[in-house]
Every structure is written in C-alpha cells, then in structure tokens.
Length: 420
Image 1 (cartoon, rainbow, N blue to C red):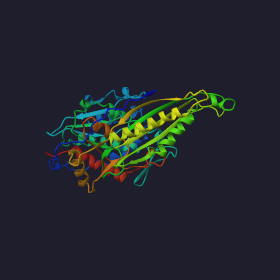
Image 2 (cartoon, helix red, strand yellow):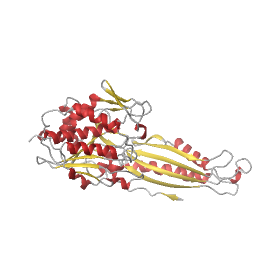
Image 3 (tube, rainbow, N blue to C red):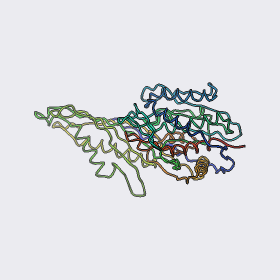
Image 4 (cartoon, rainbow, N blue to C red):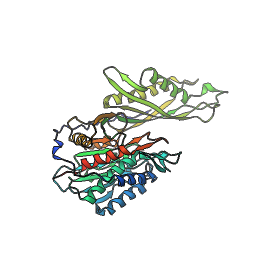
C-alpha cells in the first residue's frame, strides 16, 4: 500500500507589518474612461480562452498596452505554463512600470482563463447587465471582467501619464484548474511588490482578506475480478470497498460540512468515482478523486488522514473466499494553503480607502474557495481580492453587472495612482 505522506505545514501569509496610513497615497484626480473599459470587457469576454489556451487573450492585452505607449520590452510572459499538469500555450503576462514617485511597488492582477462552458460566448448588453447571446455558453465575466479592470487601469496611467508608485500588472493563466499561474509565478519577476490587489469576484465593495486551503486526493482501489453470477465469492469488489469507506466518512462526520469540537471546521467531498465495465463482473478497479478544505492547516490534514484511513480500513474488510483482500493506493497534493490578512495590513487599508473614495462601504470577507491570492500570499506578497460585478459564474446564466464593474475600475485607478 502506498500512502502519501502528510505535507509539511506551510506558514500562513499574514503580515505583521505595522499599518501605514493611506492618507499619503491620495488617488490621482479624474475618473477612468468607463466607455473604453466597457468596450474592453465586451471584447475580452468574446475571446475564447479556457485554461491552457490563453494566447489570444494575452495577445489582445499586449496589443492594447503597446498601442497606449507601453515599451514592448516591459511586457513579458514567463514559463509558468510549463510547470502545470496540462499542456499550456502561454505563461503569465507581466507588465512593469517604474514609479514616478518614491513608494513601495504595487501589484494589480486578474487571471485571464475561463472555464470550458464559456467558450463561444457572445456578450450582449441588456441595460446595465451583460449576458451571452449564445444560450449554450457562460459569459466569461469570470474573469475577463477582472482582466479588463486591470488593463483599463494600465491604459489610463500610460495615456494620461498619471503619477504613480512603481507598478506591476499581472494577468495569470490557468487559475480555474488549480491556481497554477499564481502558484508558479516568480516574485522576482514581479519586482517584489509589497502591496497587491486581485480582481476576481462579485461586489466591488467586498474585500476578501482570507481564503481556505485545499488539498486534492486521488485514490485507486484494486480488487479482483470474477464472474458475478458463477463465482462472485472469488472476486474482491472495489466498488464495495469504496462504498464502505464513504459510508464510514459520512457516519463519522468526515464528509461534507465538517464541524468538530473546539471550533474546528472544514469540508470534504468525494467528487469523482470511476469504475466497472459490466454488471456481470465483480469490479476490480475503482478510481476516486476527492478533496479536503479548511482554514486551519492542521485540521485540514486531519481530514485528509481520516479519508485515507477510511479507505485503508475498508480495503481490509472486503475479502474473497480465499481470504484475500483488496488494496488502495493514495496520492495527494496541496492545491493552495489558507491565508488571512492582518486587520492592519497596508494592502487592506489602501483598498478600503479606495472603496470609500468611490462612495461605498468596504466589507471584509473570507472565502471558502481558493483564489490566486492564496498563492500570492504564500509567495510573501500580501494580496486582497476585490469584486468586479460577476454573477452566476460557471453557468449559462452568468451575468456582468456593469455598474459594479465601473465601480471596480474607479477603485483600481485609485489604488494604482498617487499624487505627489
């Protein structure tokens, strides 16, 4: 039996720095060109670009930057796509600008891949909402809306020559399948920013300051085939092993929403089960894919351990007439670790001030899903995630709220620009 060793615990990426008053970083005068921003997001949502196929999206962004006066050698792509499980076309797109004033470097980012259901999107505006005119596709506002927010901000700064600290603009790839662009980016290639802002979500006043950590588990169950009618006792059912293990997890409270004494919380899911070819054959092989999540790294590992133990126990329970048992092989990987920004983190304070400046009341939130911010914080770059008007993501009913998108554009310009 091959059991995956428990992963080493990764440190939480919360900052211990003392707060810096955002009063010294007043937003530049003026508002962004919202008509252009809307045109950009409509064009971006129409470009196919699911995870691993982001070349056309990256090229559109590059062309816009160059046309606005960006030096071509300031726009680069890295090799993050060469370190991912799938064959990707292109790496993360990075654009760096030297500052016109002395201040810590800031990073603005938004991933550019979409989920497969959005391929074929035909964005159509209906008042203040945008939907796909193709009823079979999602819109792709997740996350082309975020990509447009970041791009429009870069164009504003380039064309209007607004004063600003050193800036890095990042458009990561392959977020939807495991945050791989952010996972594999090198902080040095970003200029080692000290404050970072990620656009990927719903309301523009919602500031995600923390997110859960996720662990993926792959379980292979090996039984023994036999004729299910003539000699079932000679077989070892991999299906039975899987069923016993899952039943144990449910019975003992380790599946679904998990709440244990001491305030320990998390979730787990047996998401994929493949096995068997015919009803008259005892199943000799089943493949399972599962996950465990928790904001507490140690408790998440306990969930993983419980899942692994349940399958190991179940394999010992199912025997054939000769007394032989099945076996399981388990492998896993940490998709992303949890994080929580400190309440006085400068990144958070700057974002909150920008939200207030556009007339909104900032709301701090914690996510039970993974974000590119998980890996940016793990890289030592404190990152807050802001919304940009996406609704009903990953469905054919996806919409973009243009009023919220415009507010996001205003907020982005404020966090990126500074008056001397």
